[in-house]
Each structure stands twice: as C-alpha cells, then as structure tokens.
Image (tube, rainbow, N blue to C red; front, side, top):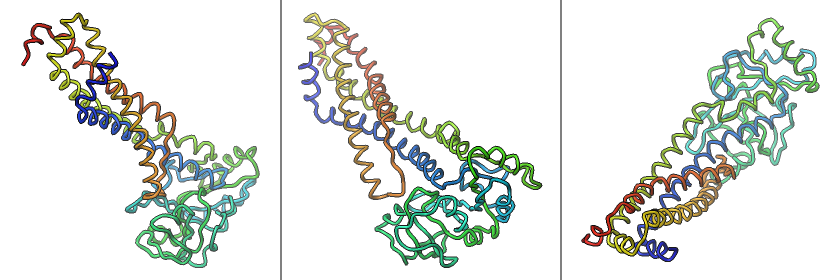
Amino acid sequence: MNKLILGNLLHRPLRSLLSLSAVAIEVVMILSVTAIMLGILNDSKTRTNGIGADMVVRPANASFLTGFGGAPVPAKVADVLAKLPHVEVASPTIVQLTTTATAVENIYGIDYKSFNALRPFVFLEGTPFHGPDDVIVDDIFARSDGGHKIGDTIQILKHPFRICGIVEHGKGGRKFIPIGTLGALTGAPGNASLFYLKTDGPQYQQDVRREILATPGLGQYQVQTMQELLSQLTPSHIPALTISLNVVIGIAMIVGFLAIFQSMYTAVMERTREIGILKALGASRSYIVSVVMRETGLLAVGGVILGIALTFLVKVWMSHKFPTTPFHITSHWMIWGSLLAFLGAMIGAIYPAYKAAQKDPIDALAYE
C-alpha cells in the first residue's frame, strides 16, 4: 500500500506540490498571525513591567490598554500622590497611541526625573532631555529603518525631534519625549494619562490604595497594583483579539480544506479505472478509503513541516524588515497550528474517500 500511495503522489507531482503548499500556507497563516498578535501583547506586558512601578493610578473611565484614553487629568495630581504615606515616587505620564508606515506604537510623554526614579534608564549612548524637542529612543528602534544615531531627527506626531539618548529596551515604550511637549502636541497641555507609583514595599500597597481613594477629588480614580494590571493583558480580556484570531484560524482551515478536497476529489475521478481494478482484485471499501486518507495524511504532514519552516523564514524577514514588531513563535501554537492544519486536510479528504469507496467495480472498469 505504501508503494501505491507514493506512486499516486508522484504520478501528479504538480498537484501534490500545490496541495502540500496549501497546507503549508494554512500553517503559516495561523502561526504568523498568532505570533504577531500575541507577540505584541506579551511584549507590551514585558515592557510595562519593566517601567519599575508598583502601582498605577488612572482616571475612572480609562481603559486598561494604555494609549487609548488621551490625557484627561491634570499632571499636578502627581504632587498630591507623592505626598501620601508610603509613596516614594509618583510619575505623571502621557501614553499616546500612534501609527506609522511600519508600526503601531505608544509614545511616552514623561517627566524624566520621576519616571527615571521608578527604574533608571540604562543609557547606551547620549544623555537625558536637554530641550522640549528631544527624544530618547530604545536600542531596538535605533537599529530599525537603516539605523538611527545621536543627533538624528525623527518625526513624531508630525513634529521633528532630535535623538538625545539611546537606552536599553524594555522600559515602557520605544520613544520617550517630555510630557509637556506631548501634552501640547495632543491638545492636552499640563495633563497626564496616568500616574505610575513606587511604594515603600508591597506590604503597603493596600494602604496606598485606601489613602488615594480617601483623598478628596481622587475617589473615582482606578488604583491597581502592577500585578493586577498585567493580569488583564491577556487575550481573554481583549475580545477583539480573540475574535480576530478565531476568524483568521477559521479562514486558514477553510483554505486547507478546500485545497485538499479539490485535489483528492480530482485524483479520485482520474483514478476511476484504477479503483475499479483494485476492487475487482478484491480490495475492500475500507482499503480504498485507507489509500485516499493515507495519501492525504502524507500531504498534510509534509505541508505542516514546510509551513513551520516557512514561518521561521517569515520571522527572520520580520526581524530585518520590521524589528520593532515582535514575532513570537510559541511551541503551544506550533502544536495547535499543526493539529488544525492536519485536521482540516483530513476532513477535506473524507468525501473523496467515500466517493472512491462507493464506486461499482464494473462501472469503474468501463469508465473512459
């Protein structure tokens, strides 16, 4: 049977290659989309944790996704927060979501002294801000788009900024500008999006929360520990992300299903006489079904292997073309993507296999 299956696949090499490629494309679609979407989410968690804050204070109606709420509250609230017991640092920050030709990113408007006090920047080159139009960038951005160096000018919100410092990545955003400048550019001068707090220790965090909510004017604010904030950065808390993943996976499975269905159905029609000969020689229906399904299984396995290999090539290309876009391939999704592709292919072969098994040997032998 193995020789028969291999011979059938090699007899029509182009069709076999197209079927294998369809399964590979299905795997690439699933792994690439999950690698980008979940990569961005996990990267956001890592960089948010890298800020060094213990707690975050936000306006009442602010989303836990930073960058979407503008800057609706006075930055001077930080002075009130800093005077509370057990609060070492209160840093007002604007987080503004922006889009460019190569990335969707959050620009951080910071008060350098307090933001640096949360966890100091690690400078690789350059210095902190010297003026309102200076920008600090991380090393990943500095390597993108052919490279950036100290003194270069970049555009942020259609405004020119001079790169004054390059820091290690992992502390919030990739670009940091003075909070006053970002507030002016976004029409919210003197305001902030949120406040990062550093406390005397985790044992005081509940006390700090109660003190903030008991302070006049701050009772409606959201007060969370960083652990509570980070726990929300999961696909289950972002319905649009889960829906997007399901839609893409569903489309990928349909592509694989249709490709295998068309390929195996055509193969069965072309082999009508051969199937008749096999049945005349005593081949059972289960034997005919087994031949078709094993051919499909071999194509699916080959397509999965090719798809995984191509996905790693996509990762290499992404790292060079879009270095600021995280592309995290996980073993979990490699397994799931492979299983979904294999399952879609096998489902696509069920009807052609059934059709082959139902052929009457006399009619099949007389088929022209």
